[in-house]
Length: 213
Image (cartoon, rainbow, N blue to C red; front, side, top):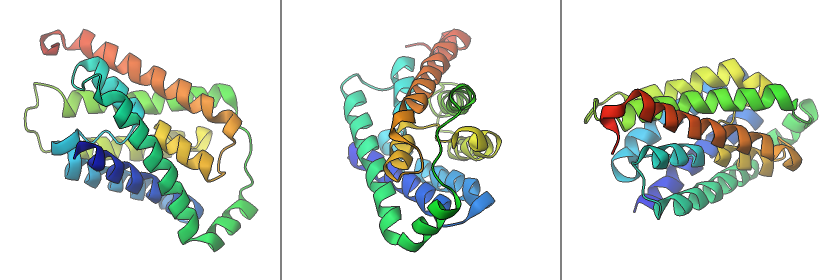
C-alpha cells in the first residue's frame, strides 16, 4: 500500500509541475506546486510517510525512520511516477508544450549556481520534513503538510530561476524527460539534492540527540 501511495503522490506532484510550467501558468506555478505537495502529504503521510522524493527518502532513512528494504523501492517508484507524470503533462497539453519550447528553448545549466541552488532548496525541504514530520517532539502534529508545502513554494520562488527549482530527483527526472532540462545536466540535480539530504539528516541527529533511535 505504501508504494502505491508514494507513486500517487509523486505522480501528481510532477504532473502539476509539468502542467504549470509548460502550460503557461508563469509566476503562479510555485503556488500550485506547493499546494499539491501539501495536500498529498496530508493524504498519504499516515500510510507511507509521504516522501514523494528520493532525497527525502534518503534523509528519512539516515535519520532512522525508513527501513533499508524500503529505500530502493521508494526511490524506484518515485522516479517512475515522476517520468510518467511528465509524460502525462505533455500528452494533455501538446499545444502548450510546443508554445513553451518556442518561447523557452532548453539551455544548459549554469553548473555552479544551479548546484548550490538545488542543494539549498533540497536541504531546506529535508530539514523541515525531518523536524516536523519525524520528530518525537511533534507527535501526531497537524502542521507538517503545510510546512513542507510552503517550504517548496518559498524555495521555488527564491531559487527556481537559477536551477529550475526541482529539489527532488523525481522532479528532475520528469523535467529531463519532458525536455525542459538537458539529460547531460541531470547530475547537477542528483548530486546537489542527495548531498543536501545527507547533510540534513546528519544535522538533525546532531541537533536532536534525544531523538536518535
